[in-house]
Structures are given as C-alpha cells and as structure tokens.
Image (tube, rainbow, N blue to C red; front, side, top):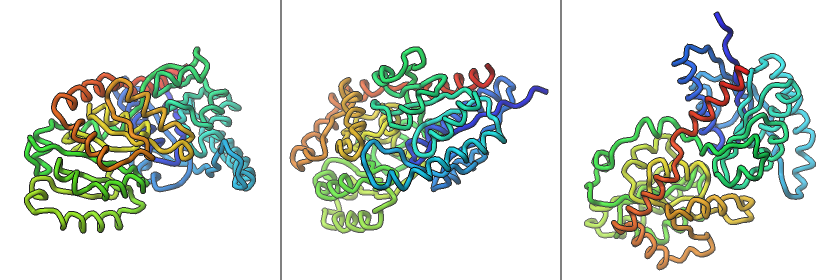
Length: 380
C-alpha cells in the first residue's frame, strides 16, 4: 500500500486565516478520497480559539508559539525577538518528526517559522495571500515558497511572476454546502419573500465603529429592511442590549414587518447569506470572497489606513471598481448620506446590477485549485 501523503498546514491568528485553510484542507480530503490517495494533515500554529474547530476536522495540532511580525517600530518587537527564535526552533523540531511532503501556509502569526523550517528541510512550500496588499509574513515567506496563490489578481505582481497565480480566496465549506434559494431562506427566518434583509457584519472580533454607527441609524434602517446584526464576540452583550432598547422605541408595526436580530458570531451564516439583499461589512478578503460567492450587493467600510496597513482600503476599491460594492470610508459615515446609499443599493435595478457584478468577481474553485496544487507538490 502506498504511503499516505503528509501535508503540513500553518497560518493563524484570525478566522480570515483559519477558515480558508480549512476550506483547502476539506478539498484535499475530497480529492484524495476520489482518487484513492492516502493523506494525513497536521496543523502547526498557535493554540487559540480556533484549535477546537481545526481538531474537529481530524487535523492534528502541534503548537508553534506566536510572535507577531510588525512593519513599524515598537517596544513589543524587542520582547518578541526571543519568542520568534524559539518559534523557529519549535517549527524545526515538529517538522523533523513529521516531515510533511508539502507545507501550505495561509500567513498570519507563527506561519513564517514553519515556512522557514520547511525550506531548510527542502520541503515544498505553497503559500496563499488573501489580500490585495501582501502581509509581512507572506512577503517574507515568498522568498522560500515553491508556489504562491493569490486572492486578488493585482497582488500577483508583488511576487515572482513565475511562482504566483491568481486563484481567488477559498471560503468556508459549510457556507456553500448550506446554500438555499432566497425565498426559502427568508421563509425560514420568518420573513416575507418581498421584504428586504440587510446583513450587518462586525467580524469575529467585532468592529466597534460599525456597531456603534448601526445603533445610530437603526430606526431609519428598520423603516427600510429587516436587520440581522452580527456584532462580533467582543461587545455583543452591550450592543445587543442597546439595540433591543432602540427597537422598543420603534412602532410595533415596523418591527413586525422588519425585525431586528442581533448575535455575537455564527459559524453558520449560510442561511443569512442566502436571504440577504445587502451586506454592510468591513473589507476583509474573506468577507469579500463570501459575499461574492452569494452574489450579494454590499456597502464596504474598510478599516482605516492606520489600523490595517491599508490592505482593507485596497481590497474594497479593487472589489468595488466592478460595481459590486459601494465603498464608504469610516471617517465619511454620515447618517443621512448612508441611509440614502442603503436605499439606492436596495432599489431593484441597482441591486440586480450589483449582484451581477459580485457574481462575476467570484472564483468558486479557489479551494479546489489550491488543493490540487498542494497534492501535486506533495507527490513531486
């Protein structure tokens, strides 16, 4: 019997790293099963809130301490130097005992030590850059990569062109598997098929600026649409309480027609994505990939330059130039103008045009393409 392919996975620190990683892992398992290829996967990275999710996919975990790489001067850089070198030693040790046939990296904290260790052992390395501007970890990792997959077409130019390819961004498998038609999705949420639904996403950690602004305009929004508000875990309790208080001030007739629902975070957004007529969110690469997969028009509010090294702004404008999204800078959030833009995006003609543009941008086979390349490198 042929030996199993050993595939090392690394990348973490946020859902934006872990969920695409798991989407590719799921495709690797599917392709391997269909082709009767034995495969075993092991994750090298931090032990954090995502560890349980990773282990639920039958993926082993070996801890690599997280030492953040920063582009800016900070005292924390000095403190992280010993941790960084220790993480390299941990990566060398764990890879020595596993010796994967390939390492797939999604970037993020603790990924670079694993990539470096793989290169030292002459193990092929496949990296994926989700954003339109490469992160520092992937810029460094690219020097040791065998192949580079890119979530945005323009970012390929930032790497060696003979190594880089535009694949798009993998999205969570459970989202696509749970996709249903819009009428059934709205019915399952207790909504009439003709009533619009606006989905407001604060991200897994929560965006305080978006959450607070949502409360400011909530009465006007509920005049237009039902609202599902995912606040993020960090400040759910407070936002939920304030949102319910505001909803009590609105006429029962409006609330009956356009209910307000608030949750901290859900791994199963497929029902809401399937029902949504408009998404209001940050401009993370994963969010953009998901809303384009469901062909949902969006209003994107990118993180300010100082908070994200500018990559969310670039993501937003790159995605929005095709007409799939309206872009609003956080400093330009004005209630009256915002409500006007929501009205425009919900109007039938504009909504249809934006939906078609989102559909065109979607790369549905991203996870499959990356998985096939990982298997090819492992077999080479």
